[in-house]
Image 1 (tube, rainbow, N blue to C red):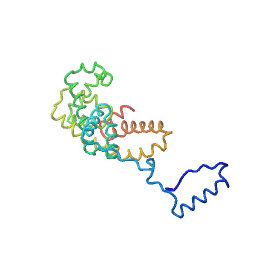
Image 2 (cartoon, one colour):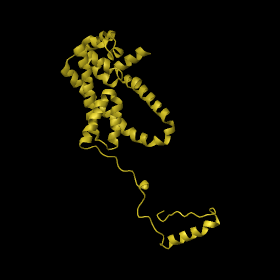
Image 3 (cartoon, one colour):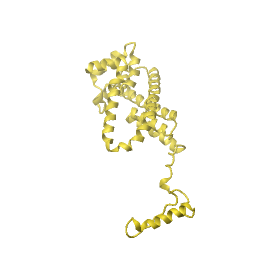
Image 4 (tube, helix red, strand yellow):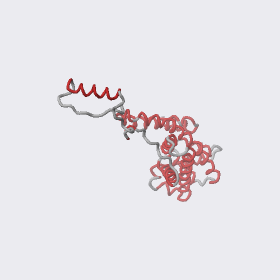
Amino acid sequence: MPQARLIEVEGGHGVEDSHEVIRFIASVESGQAAKRPAPVPAAEPYPDLVVSDGARFWILILIIILCTFVAEDPTCLAAGLLAAEGIIGFWWAALACTVGIFIGDMVLYALGRWLGRDALRRAPLKWIVKEHEIDRMAGWFGSPRGMLVIVSSRFIPASRVPTFVTAGILRLGLPRLSMLLFTAALVWTPVLMLLGSTLGPPFMEQFPRYKQYAMWIVLGLFAFIWFFTHWVVPAMTWRGRREIVMKV
């Protein structure tokens, strides 16, 4: 109410202040009551998010690329959310994720190619890839579907590091391998980003309302992502179904 004002009356809020209320209503109805010139800052709408441009744009691109070295899929989901908020263009973010993922894949391949089996005896690779797995993967790579095994690892979490390192140790052809890895990343990245841009904004809008359950929501979300990526996605490929059967 633009004419609202504060008046302190001694003696409570009954008959004692009724006269002030009557005078206030009369002044409003007659148009004599003073109005506030503009809404207070707290009542104004929130400003729009700043769109990245210039140096900020390239810094954000670099951050996305670096984040893919740590966690590829979560970075793609977060990039999709940034695109949905208008902070960065969807395809620019997709390109940054793809380039970062491709560079990470090539680094793993280079480690295996340059260091050979010695790479498997050094941390952190010795905790991820076992030497006895190399011979098994060598049989897969030697089959007509060898390159398909490498491409399918893009869609099977926890299989990328051992697969790409092993590909380097076995010195698979780099031109064809790099083309397949880049294509796989180019296909997988927009899918995850679209998921993040579609589900991210509604989730963020509802999150403050249920903030007291935030810990359980996050844990449940991680559990769902783990189940989806370790069981549902692998079940979509012949290699993944084979590994699931071996687990069971």
